[in-house]
Image (cartoon, rainbow, N blue to C red):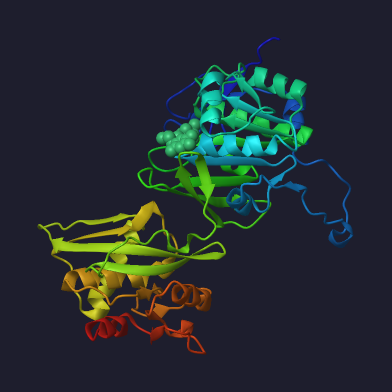
Amino acid sequence: MASPKTHYVCSECGASSAKWLGRCPSCSAWNTLVETVAESGGAAKNRYQSLARSQPVATLSEIEAKDFDRTPTSLEELDRVLGGGIVTGGVVLIGGDPGIGKSTLLLQAVDALSRQMKVLYVTGEESGAQVAMRSRRLGLDGSQVRVLAEIGLEKILATIEVEAPDFCVIDSIQTLYSEQLSSAPGSVAQVRECAAQLTRTAKATGCAMVLVGHVTKEGALAGPRVLEHIVDTVLYFEGDTHSSYRLVRAIKNRFGAVNEIGVFAMTEKGLKGVTNPSAIFLSTHGEPVPGSCVLVTLEGTRPLLVELQALVDGGGPSPRRLSVGLDRDRLAMLLAVLHRHAGVATMDQDVFVNAVGGVRITEPAADLAVLLAIQSSLRGKALPKGFIAFGEVGLAGEVRPAPRGQERLKEAAKLGFSVAVVPQANAPKKPINGLTVHAVARIEDAIEILRGM
Ligand code: TYD
Ligand code: MG
């Protein structure tokens, strides 16, 4: 095969150049030229043909809305984030830190699916022997799982054609290279080209695919963000590698809800689903300690109780604000609100906050619990036993309601929590058994209640 020519395209403005340049001659942006396969008009047209087949114009109501053909993986927590199972021709990108358990989870999924369909596991990072060893260790039968240790994209595509699998895992996309490009495996150009080719194959053959991707130091999927819109579903694996719990979160899903999470525990026999995860992120203090406040957060469809910890300590001339699992800019904003509206000053203090268990909390409903933990640490006085809080805090000092407040309160009551500080609009209409609820409209009211406890 004659190797097709490549050229360099600016990722900012789209200008092309025959050779690589540090600066785009057209828009003058630095370091934006990326190697791309040069295609004739015909080839370029073919490229996306199978992504969406051309059809005559039709009225929406006349188009048959058939549900996607889903196959459950029999890993219940994985199915939950996928929206019910893998979809024919669907492409899933799964990202996460090294060592978090991506290969383990996918090997388990491939093994379970091999009982119902033809599966292929392509490994570019490990040898076949290593995969076999892991499979033995996991106690998997693995007899029907076909394994290919290969990093050449063209060879992989040829194998897919011959083997005709219904489900294929590529572990990982960063190790693949296409002969059409001269850039190294893992470069933006290679990752993008390989993902596009594999996606096209998935759509054309109906083979469901999972691409494993690595995460950069900045926390984004390595390679371009373009990967995220090529694929149908993007999942992130998160959690603290030092604890045994792992969360799989859907960031994008064309076949189901986003922000649904699956919870797993890493055991000696691989990842096991945790079906009732609401209490796993609580640390176990015998007696309440200062600087700790339990938040009821809502992840996807299930409430989770997460302990937030704050430490406020005398700082130097430029005090530090650090957060783990929470947004640092938001912390700075909350501290300003706390000072301005509740008169609690932390200007000369270092403030550290942490969400226990390596969870990442993105919803603003965590605000109130963060502020109460900070206030508790500042006073050196623990919150009462069985205390929970949630609610968003605005710049004007108002406490705004959190979605589905009743569900959060009920879950907390079920787990034996007895005191809650919540936004006014989330106050329950009927009293909840065993739970005393203080409804507040402003942050100063919440701080006032705390002082009286
Ligand atoms: P792995 O799936 O190789 O991670 P990734 O593919 O995301 O890089 O996960 C490996 C880690 O999980 C490793 O540190 C060992 C641990 N582990 C277990 O604790 N139990 C097991 O049964 C297996 C297979 C791995
Ligand atoms: Mg791996």
